[in-house]
Length: 468
Ligand code: FAD
Ligand code: SF4
Image (cartoon, rainbow, N blue to C red; front, top):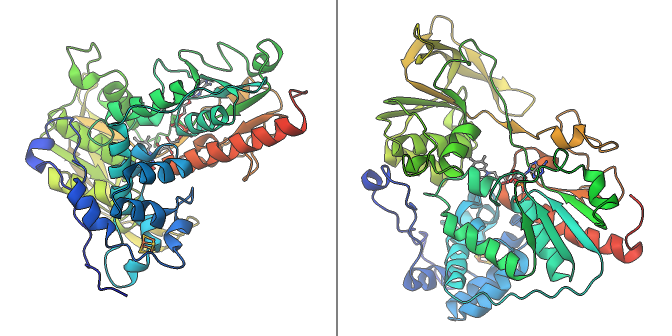
Protein backbone atom coordinates (compact mmCIF):
# COMPACT_ATOMS: atom_id res chain seq x y z
CA UNK A 1 0.00 0.00 0.00
CA UNK A 2 1.48 3.41 -0.91
CA UNK A 3 2.35 5.70 2.01
CA UNK A 4 -0.33 8.38 2.30
CA UNK A 5 -0.12 11.88 3.71
CA UNK A 6 -1.47 11.91 7.26
CA UNK A 7 -3.21 15.28 7.20
CA UNK A 8 -6.30 16.33 5.26
CA UNK A 9 -5.71 19.07 2.69
CA UNK A 10 -7.06 22.06 4.64
CA UNK A 11 -10.11 23.91 3.34
CA UNK A 12 -9.15 27.51 2.47
CA UNK A 13 -11.16 29.85 4.72
CA UNK A 14 -11.60 33.61 4.88
CA UNK A 15 -9.82 35.49 7.64
CA UNK A 16 -11.80 35.17 10.90
CA UNK A 17 -11.62 38.89 11.81
CA UNK A 18 -12.94 39.92 8.40
CA UNK A 19 -15.58 37.25 7.89
CA UNK A 20 -17.08 37.71 11.39
CA UNK A 21 -18.49 41.04 10.18
CA UNK A 22 -20.07 40.08 6.88
CA UNK A 23 -22.33 37.37 5.49
CA UNK A 24 -20.11 36.10 2.67
CA UNK A 25 -19.26 32.41 2.66
CA UNK A 26 -16.58 31.39 5.17
CA UNK A 27 -15.16 28.37 3.32
CA UNK A 28 -13.65 29.25 -0.04
CA UNK A 29 -13.62 25.76 -1.56
CA UNK A 30 -10.77 23.63 -2.89
CA UNK A 31 -8.84 24.63 -6.01
CA UNK A 32 -8.20 21.96 -8.68
CA UNK A 33 -4.76 21.44 -7.14
CA UNK A 34 -6.15 20.97 -3.61
CA UNK A 35 -8.76 18.53 -4.93
CA UNK A 36 -6.38 16.30 -6.90
CA UNK A 37 -3.91 16.37 -4.00
CA UNK A 38 -6.64 15.26 -1.57
CA UNK A 39 -8.16 12.73 -3.98
CA UNK A 40 -4.74 11.05 -4.15
CA UNK A 41 -4.97 10.32 -0.41
CA UNK A 42 -7.87 7.89 -0.94
CA UNK A 43 -6.74 4.27 -0.58
CA UNK A 44 -9.49 2.92 -2.90
CA UNK A 45 -10.19 0.25 -0.32
CA UNK A 46 -11.54 -3.15 -1.29
CA UNK A 47 -14.25 -2.72 1.35
CA UNK A 48 -15.01 1.01 1.19
CA UNK A 49 -16.75 1.34 4.55
CA UNK A 50 -17.07 5.09 3.98
CA UNK A 51 -19.97 4.22 1.63
CA UNK A 52 -21.81 2.53 4.52
CA UNK A 53 -21.29 5.63 6.63
CA UNK A 54 -23.10 7.81 4.08
CA UNK A 55 -26.90 7.79 4.57
CA UNK A 56 -27.44 7.74 0.77
CA UNK A 57 -24.49 5.43 0.04
CA UNK A 58 -22.63 7.65 -2.43
CA UNK A 59 -20.04 5.48 -4.27
CA UNK A 60 -17.30 7.51 -2.60
CA UNK A 61 -14.14 5.82 -3.94
CA UNK A 62 -15.52 6.00 -7.49
CA UNK A 63 -16.18 9.73 -7.47
CA UNK A 64 -12.86 10.42 -5.74
CA UNK A 65 -11.08 8.27 -8.33
CA UNK A 66 -12.77 10.26 -11.10
CA UNK A 67 -11.41 13.50 -9.57
CA UNK A 68 -7.92 12.00 -9.35
CA UNK A 69 -8.17 11.02 -13.04
CA UNK A 70 -9.32 14.52 -14.02
CA UNK A 71 -12.72 13.22 -15.12
CA UNK A 72 -14.95 15.95 -13.65
CA UNK A 73 -18.08 15.15 -15.72
CA UNK A 74 -17.74 11.53 -14.52
CA UNK A 75 -17.29 12.58 -10.89
CA UNK A 76 -20.37 14.83 -11.11
CA UNK A 77 -22.45 12.06 -12.70
CA UNK A 78 -21.51 9.50 -10.02
CA UNK A 79 -22.19 11.95 -7.21
CA UNK A 80 -25.52 13.27 -8.46
CA UNK A 81 -26.70 9.72 -9.22
CA UNK A 82 -26.66 9.00 -5.48
CA UNK A 83 -27.19 12.41 -3.91
CA UNK A 84 -29.47 14.95 -5.61
CA UNK A 85 -28.20 17.85 -3.42
CA UNK A 86 -24.38 17.48 -3.57
CA UNK A 87 -23.44 21.17 -3.42
CA UNK A 88 -25.54 21.51 -0.26
CA UNK A 89 -24.45 18.28 1.47
CA UNK A 90 -20.79 18.99 0.60
CA UNK A 91 -21.19 22.16 2.67
CA UNK A 92 -23.41 21.19 5.61
CA UNK A 93 -23.30 17.40 6.23
CA UNK A 94 -21.76 16.36 9.54
CA UNK A 95 -19.19 14.21 7.68
CA UNK A 96 -17.15 13.69 10.84
CA UNK A 97 -19.92 11.48 12.24
CA UNK A 98 -20.89 9.91 8.89
CA UNK A 99 -18.69 8.84 5.92
CA UNK A 100 -15.44 10.33 7.24
CA UNK A 101 -15.79 8.59 10.60
CA UNK A 102 -15.75 5.25 8.76
CA UNK A 103 -12.81 6.01 6.42
CA UNK A 104 -9.98 3.48 6.85
CA UNK A 105 -7.50 6.34 7.10
CA UNK A 106 -9.01 7.29 10.50
CA UNK A 107 -7.27 4.32 12.12
CA UNK A 108 -3.86 5.96 11.65
CA UNK A 109 -4.30 9.40 10.13
CA UNK A 110 -6.90 12.03 9.28
CA UNK A 111 -9.77 10.71 7.11
CA UNK A 112 -9.98 11.65 3.44
CA UNK A 113 -11.83 15.00 3.18
CA UNK A 114 -14.86 13.43 1.48
CA UNK A 115 -17.14 16.41 2.17
CA UNK A 116 -14.70 18.98 0.76
CA UNK A 117 -14.26 16.83 -2.37
CA UNK A 118 -18.04 16.47 -2.75
CA UNK A 119 -18.38 20.25 -2.61
CA UNK A 120 -15.54 20.66 -5.12
CA UNK A 121 -17.27 18.42 -7.68
CA UNK A 122 -20.67 20.02 -7.14
CA UNK A 123 -19.23 23.53 -7.46
CA UNK A 124 -17.54 22.51 -10.71
CA UNK A 125 -20.90 21.21 -11.93
CA UNK A 126 -22.50 24.58 -11.18
CA UNK A 127 -20.13 26.23 -13.67
CA UNK A 128 -21.60 24.03 -16.43
CA UNK A 129 -24.92 24.63 -18.23
CA UNK A 130 -27.84 22.75 -16.63
CA UNK A 131 -28.32 19.64 -18.73
CA UNK A 132 -31.38 18.16 -16.94
CA UNK A 133 -34.56 18.17 -19.05
CA UNK A 134 -38.24 17.54 -18.33
CA UNK A 135 -39.38 14.10 -19.42
CA UNK A 136 -42.95 13.67 -18.17
CA UNK A 137 -44.14 10.34 -19.48
CA UNK A 138 -46.71 9.19 -16.92
CA UNK A 139 -50.35 10.15 -16.50
CA UNK A 140 -50.40 10.31 -12.68
CA UNK A 141 -49.43 13.60 -11.03
CA UNK A 142 -47.98 13.82 -7.52
CA UNK A 143 -48.20 16.56 -4.88
CA UNK A 144 -45.32 17.26 -2.49
CA UNK A 145 -45.98 19.33 0.64
CA UNK A 146 -42.99 21.41 1.74
CA UNK A 147 -39.96 22.54 -0.27
CA UNK A 148 -37.22 21.55 2.19
CA UNK A 149 -34.58 18.96 1.28
CA UNK A 150 -36.93 15.98 1.74
CA UNK A 151 -39.61 17.50 -0.53
CA UNK A 152 -37.12 18.79 -3.13
CA UNK A 153 -35.38 15.42 -3.44
CA UNK A 154 -38.64 13.46 -3.52
CA UNK A 155 -39.93 15.77 -6.28
CA UNK A 156 -36.70 15.48 -8.28
CA UNK A 157 -36.66 11.69 -8.10
CA UNK A 158 -40.34 11.47 -9.13
CA UNK A 159 -39.72 13.84 -12.05
CA UNK A 160 -36.79 11.64 -13.11
CA UNK A 161 -39.20 8.69 -13.07
CA UNK A 162 -41.49 10.57 -15.46
CA UNK A 163 -44.17 11.99 -13.11
CA UNK A 164 -45.60 15.51 -13.16
CA UNK A 165 -44.86 16.89 -9.68
CA UNK A 166 -46.06 20.03 -7.92
CA UNK A 167 -44.48 21.18 -4.64
CA UNK A 168 -46.70 23.29 -2.38
CA UNK A 169 -44.66 25.49 -0.02
CA UNK A 170 -46.08 27.58 2.84
CA UNK A 171 -43.39 30.28 2.71
CA UNK A 172 -42.79 32.71 -0.15
CA UNK A 173 -39.60 30.95 -1.30
CA UNK A 174 -38.56 27.28 -1.54
CA UNK A 175 -35.72 25.57 0.37
CA UNK A 176 -37.07 25.01 3.89
CA UNK A 177 -34.32 25.28 6.51
CA UNK A 178 -31.76 25.57 3.70
CA UNK A 179 -33.23 29.02 2.98
CA UNK A 180 -34.71 30.29 6.23
CA UNK A 181 -32.36 28.62 8.76
CA UNK A 182 -28.81 28.11 7.49
CA UNK A 183 -27.14 31.50 6.94
CA UNK A 184 -25.55 32.78 3.74
CA UNK A 185 -22.05 32.51 5.27
CA UNK A 186 -22.43 28.71 5.37
CA UNK A 187 -24.75 28.05 2.44
CA UNK A 188 -25.05 30.84 -0.15
CA UNK A 189 -28.56 31.23 -1.53
CA UNK A 190 -27.09 31.14 -5.07
CA UNK A 191 -26.07 27.49 -4.44
CA UNK A 192 -29.57 26.57 -3.26
CA UNK A 193 -31.16 28.49 -6.16
CA UNK A 194 -29.04 26.55 -8.65
CA UNK A 195 -30.19 23.20 -7.20
CA UNK A 196 -33.81 24.43 -7.38
CA UNK A 197 -33.28 25.53 -11.00
CA UNK A 198 -32.14 21.97 -11.82
CA UNK A 199 -35.44 20.66 -10.43
CA UNK A 200 -37.44 23.24 -12.37
CA UNK A 201 -35.64 22.29 -15.58
CA UNK A 202 -36.75 18.70 -14.87
CA UNK A 203 -40.34 19.94 -14.95
CA UNK A 204 -40.99 20.21 -11.18
CA UNK A 205 -43.51 22.96 -10.47
CA UNK A 206 -43.13 24.91 -7.21
CA UNK A 207 -46.13 26.83 -5.86
CA UNK A 208 -45.29 29.05 -2.89
CA UNK A 209 -47.55 30.75 -0.31
CA UNK A 210 -49.82 27.69 0.01
CA UNK A 211 -50.28 26.17 3.47
CA UNK A 212 -51.66 22.67 3.00
CA UNK A 213 -54.10 22.02 5.82
CA UNK A 214 -55.09 25.71 5.85
CA UNK A 215 -55.19 27.20 2.31
CA UNK A 216 -55.93 23.79 0.80
CA UNK A 217 -57.00 20.71 2.84
CA UNK A 218 -54.83 17.65 2.17
CA UNK A 219 -57.85 15.65 1.06
CA UNK A 220 -58.54 18.22 -1.69
CA UNK A 221 -55.21 17.33 -3.30
CA UNK A 222 -56.73 13.94 -4.10
CA UNK A 223 -60.43 14.69 -4.47
CA UNK A 224 -60.50 18.13 -6.07
CA UNK A 225 -57.09 18.45 -7.67
CA UNK A 226 -56.58 14.92 -8.95
CA UNK A 227 -53.20 14.02 -7.46
CA UNK A 228 -52.52 10.29 -7.32
CA UNK A 229 -50.19 10.38 -4.30
CA UNK A 230 -48.87 12.89 -1.77
CA UNK A 231 -45.49 13.25 -0.05
CA UNK A 232 -45.35 15.25 3.20
CA UNK A 233 -42.01 16.94 3.90
CA UNK A 234 -43.16 19.66 6.27
CA UNK A 235 -40.15 19.53 8.61
CA UNK A 236 -40.01 20.32 12.31
CA UNK A 237 -40.23 24.09 12.45
CA UNK A 238 -42.03 24.65 15.75
CA UNK A 239 -39.56 26.07 18.31
CA UNK A 240 -39.42 24.89 21.91
CA UNK A 241 -39.12 27.24 24.87
CA UNK A 242 -37.69 26.63 28.34
CA UNK A 243 -40.64 27.97 30.34
CA UNK A 244 -38.35 30.06 32.56
CA UNK A 245 -39.38 33.48 33.93
CA UNK A 246 -38.70 36.41 31.57
CA UNK A 247 -39.08 34.54 28.28
CA UNK A 248 -41.66 37.13 27.17
CA UNK A 249 -39.30 40.10 27.51
CA UNK A 250 -38.31 42.21 24.50
CA UNK A 251 -35.05 40.86 23.13
CA UNK A 252 -35.92 37.16 23.63
CA UNK A 253 -36.51 35.18 20.44
CA UNK A 254 -36.47 31.62 19.23
CA UNK A 255 -33.51 30.86 16.96
CA UNK A 256 -36.01 30.04 14.22
CA UNK A 257 -37.51 33.53 14.40
CA UNK A 258 -34.11 35.22 14.57
CA UNK A 259 -32.68 33.21 11.65
CA UNK A 260 -35.86 33.48 9.55
CA UNK A 261 -35.85 37.26 9.94
CA UNK A 262 -32.22 37.33 8.86
CA UNK A 263 -32.15 34.74 6.09
CA UNK A 264 -35.62 34.56 4.56
CA UNK A 265 -36.56 38.21 5.10
CA UNK A 266 -33.02 39.54 4.47
CA UNK A 267 -32.95 41.30 7.86
CA UNK A 268 -29.18 41.61 7.71
CA UNK A 269 -29.61 44.00 4.78
CA UNK A 270 -31.87 46.44 6.73
CA UNK A 271 -32.82 49.16 5.73
CA UNK A 272 -32.39 47.93 2.13
CA UNK A 273 -34.76 45.12 3.19
CA UNK A 274 -37.52 46.26 5.51
CA UNK A 275 -37.13 43.61 8.24
CA UNK A 276 -35.35 45.15 11.22
CA UNK A 277 -33.53 42.77 13.60
CA UNK A 278 -32.49 44.45 16.84
CA UNK A 279 -29.16 43.12 18.12
CA UNK A 280 -27.61 44.67 21.24
CA UNK A 281 -23.95 44.71 22.29
CA UNK A 282 -24.17 41.39 24.16
CA UNK A 283 -25.97 38.39 22.76
CA UNK A 284 -26.58 34.98 24.38
CA UNK A 285 -27.77 31.85 22.61
CA UNK A 286 -29.04 28.94 24.68
CA UNK A 287 -28.14 25.55 23.15
CA UNK A 288 -25.12 24.09 21.33
CA UNK A 289 -26.40 22.53 18.11
CA UNK A 290 -26.00 23.77 14.52
CA UNK A 291 -28.91 26.17 14.99
CA UNK A 292 -27.31 27.71 18.07
CA UNK A 293 -23.99 28.09 16.26
CA UNK A 294 -25.69 29.75 13.26
CA UNK A 295 -27.56 32.18 15.52
CA UNK A 296 -24.55 33.17 17.64
CA UNK A 297 -22.27 33.66 14.61
CA UNK A 298 -25.00 35.71 12.90
CA UNK A 299 -25.21 37.96 15.97
CA UNK A 300 -21.52 38.90 15.57
CA UNK A 301 -22.19 39.76 11.94
CA UNK A 302 -25.09 41.96 13.08
CA UNK A 303 -22.81 43.98 15.36
CA UNK A 304 -22.84 42.16 18.73
CA UNK A 305 -19.57 42.83 20.55
CA UNK A 306 -19.85 39.84 22.88
CA UNK A 307 -21.58 36.64 21.78
CA UNK A 308 -22.13 33.70 24.11
CA UNK A 309 -23.22 30.10 23.84
CA UNK A 310 -24.89 29.00 27.08
CA UNK A 311 -25.15 25.22 27.37
CA UNK A 312 -25.96 23.11 30.40
CA UNK A 313 -23.76 20.21 29.34
CA UNK A 314 -20.11 20.19 28.19
CA UNK A 315 -18.44 20.62 24.81
CA UNK A 316 -18.33 16.81 24.46
CA UNK A 317 -22.14 16.64 24.32
CA UNK A 318 -22.74 19.58 21.91
CA UNK A 319 -24.66 18.71 18.73
CA UNK A 320 -22.99 21.19 16.34
CA UNK A 321 -20.70 20.18 13.48
CA UNK A 322 -17.07 20.33 14.57
CA UNK A 323 -16.22 22.76 11.76
CA UNK A 324 -18.89 25.24 12.88
CA UNK A 325 -17.62 25.04 16.46
CA UNK A 326 -14.03 25.78 15.36
CA UNK A 327 -15.17 28.63 13.14
CA UNK A 328 -17.21 30.08 16.00
CA UNK A 329 -14.16 30.02 18.31
CA UNK A 330 -12.00 31.71 15.65
CA UNK A 331 -14.66 34.42 15.23
CA UNK A 332 -14.65 35.19 18.96
CA UNK A 333 -17.76 33.39 20.27
CA UNK A 334 -17.45 32.69 24.01
CA UNK A 335 -18.66 29.39 25.42
CA UNK A 336 -20.35 29.06 28.79
CA UNK A 337 -20.30 25.28 29.17
CA UNK A 338 -22.04 23.54 32.07
CA UNK A 339 -24.27 26.58 32.53
CA UNK A 340 -28.02 26.35 32.96
CA UNK A 341 -30.24 29.40 32.33
CA UNK A 342 -32.68 30.06 35.21
CA UNK A 343 -34.33 33.38 34.34
CA UNK A 344 -34.21 36.18 31.78
CA UNK A 345 -33.89 39.49 33.59
CA UNK A 346 -35.35 42.74 32.23
CA UNK A 347 -35.62 46.46 32.97
CA UNK A 348 -38.75 48.48 33.86
CA UNK A 349 -39.56 48.92 30.13
CA UNK A 350 -39.55 45.18 29.50
CA UNK A 351 -36.20 44.92 27.68
CA UNK A 352 -33.68 42.16 28.44
CA UNK A 353 -30.72 43.18 30.61
CA UNK A 354 -29.30 39.81 31.63
CA UNK A 355 -29.55 36.04 31.85
CA UNK A 356 -29.48 34.50 35.31
CA UNK A 357 -27.61 31.18 35.17
CA UNK A 358 -26.37 28.41 37.42
CA UNK A 359 -23.21 26.34 36.95
CA UNK A 360 -23.62 22.57 36.54
CA UNK A 361 -21.50 19.44 36.90
CA UNK A 362 -21.95 16.19 35.00
CA UNK A 363 -23.37 13.07 36.65
CA UNK A 364 -24.38 9.61 35.42
CA UNK A 365 -25.86 9.20 31.91
CA UNK A 366 -29.59 10.01 31.61
CA UNK A 367 -32.26 8.49 29.32
CA UNK A 368 -30.60 10.13 26.28
CA UNK A 369 -27.34 8.31 27.10
CA UNK A 370 -25.58 11.63 27.78
CA UNK A 371 -24.15 12.64 31.17
CA UNK A 372 -26.86 14.22 33.32
CA UNK A 373 -26.16 17.86 34.29
CA UNK A 374 -26.49 18.46 38.05
CA UNK A 375 -26.84 22.00 39.52
CA UNK A 376 -24.03 23.31 41.75
CA UNK A 377 -25.61 25.01 44.78
CA UNK A 378 -24.68 28.67 45.27
CA UNK A 379 -23.13 29.04 41.78
CA UNK A 380 -25.79 31.39 40.38
CA UNK A 381 -24.59 34.43 38.42
CA UNK A 382 -26.02 36.96 35.93
CA UNK A 383 -24.60 37.21 32.41
CA UNK A 384 -25.26 40.80 31.27
CA UNK A 385 -26.83 40.60 27.77
CA UNK A 386 -29.38 42.50 25.66
CA UNK A 387 -30.55 39.51 23.62
CA UNK A 388 -31.41 35.93 24.49
CA UNK A 389 -32.07 33.46 21.69
CA UNK A 390 -33.36 29.96 22.36
CA UNK A 391 -31.99 27.14 20.23
CA UNK A 392 -33.03 24.17 22.33
CA UNK A 393 -34.84 22.15 19.67
CA UNK A 394 -37.92 22.11 17.48
CA UNK A 395 -40.87 19.80 16.88
CA UNK A 396 -43.17 19.31 13.86
CA UNK A 397 -45.84 21.95 13.38
CA UNK A 398 -49.20 20.25 14.18
CA UNK A 399 -51.25 22.28 11.64
CA UNK A 400 -51.44 19.63 8.93
CA UNK A 401 -51.99 16.66 11.23
CA UNK A 402 -54.73 18.48 13.17
CA UNK A 403 -56.63 19.32 9.99
CA UNK A 404 -56.27 15.91 8.32
CA UNK A 405 -58.25 12.96 9.63
CA UNK A 406 -56.51 9.59 9.88
CA UNK A 407 -52.95 10.94 9.79
CA UNK A 408 -51.33 9.37 12.85
CA UNK A 409 -48.55 10.98 14.91
CA UNK A 410 -46.45 9.65 17.79
CA UNK A 411 -46.27 11.25 21.24
CA UNK A 412 -43.57 13.68 20.04
CA UNK A 413 -45.94 14.95 17.32
CA UNK A 414 -43.93 13.28 14.52
CA UNK A 415 -45.79 11.57 11.69
CA UNK A 416 -45.96 7.79 11.97
CA UNK A 417 -44.46 6.43 8.75
CA UNK A 418 -42.84 3.23 7.54
CA UNK A 419 -39.06 3.52 7.98
CA UNK A 420 -38.25 2.23 4.51
CA UNK A 421 -41.05 3.63 2.34
CA UNK A 422 -42.37 6.57 4.36
CA UNK A 423 -45.96 5.32 3.95
CA UNK A 424 -48.14 6.99 6.59
CA UNK A 425 -51.41 5.77 8.10
CA UNK A 426 -53.26 7.12 5.02
CA UNK A 427 -53.29 5.32 1.69
CA UNK A 428 -50.97 6.88 -0.90
CA UNK A 429 -49.79 9.51 1.59
CA UNK A 430 -46.05 9.26 2.28
CA UNK A 431 -43.83 11.33 4.56
CA UNK A 432 -40.15 11.84 5.35
CA UNK A 433 -37.53 14.15 6.80
CA UNK A 434 -37.83 16.04 10.08
CA UNK A 435 -41.66 15.71 10.06
CA UNK A 436 -41.10 11.99 10.72
CA UNK A 437 -37.78 11.81 12.58
CA UNK A 438 -37.93 15.11 14.48
CA UNK A 439 -35.09 17.62 13.90
CA UNK A 440 -32.26 15.71 12.16
CA UNK A 441 -30.00 16.39 9.17
CA UNK A 442 -30.21 17.45 5.53
CA UNK A 443 -28.91 14.18 4.16
CA UNK A 444 -31.31 12.09 6.26
CA UNK A 445 -34.20 14.21 4.96
CA UNK A 446 -32.89 13.91 1.38
CA UNK A 447 -32.49 10.13 1.76
CA UNK A 448 -36.06 9.79 3.05
CA UNK A 449 -37.39 11.82 0.11
CA UNK A 450 -35.51 9.60 -2.30
CA UNK A 451 -36.81 6.35 -0.75
CA UNK A 452 -40.40 7.64 -0.70
CA UNK A 453 -40.20 8.62 -4.38
CA UNK A 454 -39.32 5.03 -5.24
CA UNK A 455 -42.07 3.74 -2.92
CA UNK A 456 -44.65 6.06 -4.53
CA UNK A 457 -43.58 4.80 -7.94
CA UNK A 458 -43.92 1.18 -6.80
CA UNK A 459 -47.34 1.85 -5.22
CA UNK A 460 -48.65 3.52 -8.38
CA UNK A 461 -47.36 0.68 -10.54
CA UNK A 462 -49.36 -1.73 -8.38
CA UNK A 463 -52.54 0.35 -8.02
CA UNK A 464 -52.57 3.38 -10.30
CA UNK A 465 -54.46 6.41 -8.97
CA UNK A 466 -56.85 4.57 -6.64
CA UNK A 467 -58.55 5.34 -3.34
CA UNK A 468 -56.91 7.04 -0.33
P1 FAD B 1 -37.50 21.56 6.29
O1 FAD B 1 -36.16 21.92 5.79
O2 FAD B 1 -37.90 22.09 7.62
O3 FAD B 1 -38.56 22.04 5.20
C1 FAD B 1 -39.94 21.91 5.43
C2 FAD B 1 -40.68 22.86 4.52
O4 FAD B 1 -42.07 22.58 4.59
C3 FAD B 1 -40.51 24.33 4.94
O5 FAD B 1 -40.15 25.10 3.81
C4 FAD B 1 -41.90 24.72 5.46
O6 FAD B 1 -42.20 26.09 5.24
C5 FAD B 1 -42.79 23.81 4.64
N1 FAD B 1 -44.09 23.54 5.26
C6 FAD B 1 -44.34 23.23 6.57
N2 FAD B 1 -45.66 23.02 6.75
C7 FAD B 1 -46.25 23.20 5.53
C8 FAD B 1 -47.61 23.12 5.08
N3 FAD B 1 -48.59 22.80 5.92
N4 FAD B 1 -47.87 23.38 3.77
C9 FAD B 1 -46.85 23.70 2.90
N5 FAD B 1 -45.55 23.78 3.29
C10 FAD B 1 -45.27 23.53 4.59
N6 FAD B 1 -28.55 19.73 9.04
C11 FAD B 1 -27.36 19.34 8.54
O7 FAD B 1 -27.24 18.24 8.00
N7 FAD B 1 -26.27 20.15 8.62
C12 FAD B 1 -26.33 21.41 9.14
O8 FAD B 1 -25.34 22.11 9.18
C13 FAD B 1 -27.59 21.85 9.63
N8 FAD B 1 -27.72 23.10 10.13
C14 FAD B 1 -28.95 23.53 10.53
C15 FAD B 1 -29.10 24.85 10.95
C16 FAD B 1 -30.33 25.32 11.34
C17 FAD B 1 -30.48 26.75 11.75
C18 FAD B 1 -31.45 24.43 11.38
C19 FAD B 1 -32.79 24.93 11.85
C20 FAD B 1 -31.31 23.12 10.98
C21 FAD B 1 -30.07 22.67 10.53
N9 FAD B 1 -29.90 21.36 10.07
C22 FAD B 1 -28.69 20.96 9.58
C23 FAD B 1 -31.03 20.43 10.01
C24 FAD B 1 -31.61 20.35 8.59
O9 FAD B 1 -31.66 21.61 8.01
C25 FAD B 1 -32.98 19.69 8.63
O10 FAD B 1 -32.85 18.41 9.19
C26 FAD B 1 -33.59 19.57 7.22
O11 FAD B 1 -33.72 20.83 6.60
C27 FAD B 1 -34.95 18.87 7.27
O12 FAD B 1 -35.49 18.87 5.99
P2 FAD B 1 -37.07 18.70 5.75
O13 FAD B 1 -37.27 18.65 4.28
O14 FAD B 1 -37.57 17.56 6.55
O15 FAD B 1 -37.75 19.99 6.38
FE1 SF4 C 1 -11.13 6.20 0.34
FE2 SF4 C 1 -11.50 6.36 3.06
FE3 SF4 C 1 -13.46 5.39 1.51
FE4 SF4 C 1 -11.16 3.96 1.85
S1 SF4 C 1 -12.69 4.46 3.40
S2 SF4 C 1 -12.31 4.28 -0.08
S3 SF4 C 1 -9.67 5.66 2.00
S4 SF4 C 1 -12.65 7.51 1.45
